[in-house]
Amino acid sequence: MQKGHKVVLIGCGAVGTSFLYASINQGLASEYVLIDVFKDAAIGNEMDLADTMAVLPSPFTKIKAGEYQDCKDADVVVITAGRPQKPGETRLAMVCDNAKIMKDIATEVKKSGFKGITIIASNPVDVLTKVYETITKFDPKTIIGSGTTLDSARLRRLLGEKINVHPSSVNAYLLGEHGDSAVAAWSNATVMGKPLQEYIDEKVVSKDDLEKIKVDAVNMAYKIIEKKRATFYGIGVCLARILKAVLKNEKATLMVGALLNGEFGCKGLYTGVPAIIGANGWEKIIEWKLSNEEQELFNKSFAQLQEVYKEAEKAI
Image (cartoon, rainbow, N blue to C red):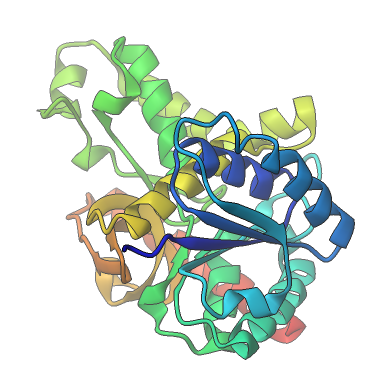
C-alpha cells in the first residue's frame, strides 16, 4: 500500500492558509500539520479546515496543529512565516526582522531530523531562502524558493489580456528578485509557440505596452496591499503548484527560487529562474540566452540581492 504524503505548514497567516486551502482542494496530500508561533492560530485553522473533510472530492485523512517534531517524517515543509509587508514597504525592507524569524525556524526544522523538501515564500524570499540554506546546511536543491512564480503568473495574465488569449497560452516570465528589480525576459517570450516579437511586428502589442505590463506585474502587490492590506490567494495557489510538482515528481518547469552556481552569469544566492521541479526538489536550472539589456538588468537585480543578504547576515 502506497504511503500518503505528509505536508507541514509553518506560518498560519493568510498566505499559509491560502496555500493549505488550495492544496486541500486539489487533493495533494493525505496529512497536514500546522505550526505557528501563535498556537491558537494553528488550532483554529485546524478546526476550520477539518470541516472540509466530509465533502471534498479528494479527501485528506488527517489535519492537526502540531510542533516542530512533526517535521521529522514529513515529505515537504512549507514556510510562509514572517511579519507582513506594510503598505508602501518593499519586500527587501523586511529583511532584518524576517531573517531572525527564519533563523529560528531553520534551527528547529534542522533539529527535528527533517529529510524532505522545503518550499519557502517568506519575504524577501530570495534572501530568506538563502538564510534557511545557510542555517540548515541542507542540500540546496532540496530548498525551493517561490521565486518569481507569482510575478510571472501576473505577467502572463496581463499580457494575455492585452493579446486576448488565456494566460495559460502565454509563455512570458519575470526573472530575478521577487520584487521591484525583477526582469521581464521578453526576448524568450512566446504565445502558443509564436515569438512575442512577431506580435510586436504585427502591431498587436507595442514595446510601450510591454513596459506597462511589466511595471504593472511588478507593482501588483502594492496595489493589492493598498486595497486589502495583504496578498495571499495568488501566492497560495503558486505554492500549491510547486508542491504538486514535488509530490507527483512532475519534472515541471517553474519560475522558482534556485541557488545559482554560475547560471545566468551569477553565483551564490537564490533567485527566480526557470528550473525543473520533481521529487528531489529543483533538479536543474534552465538557462536562457538573454538580450544584452536583460542580462544587464538581471546582473543589477542579483547584485542588489547580494547587498541585502549582507544585511540579513548581520541580523542572524
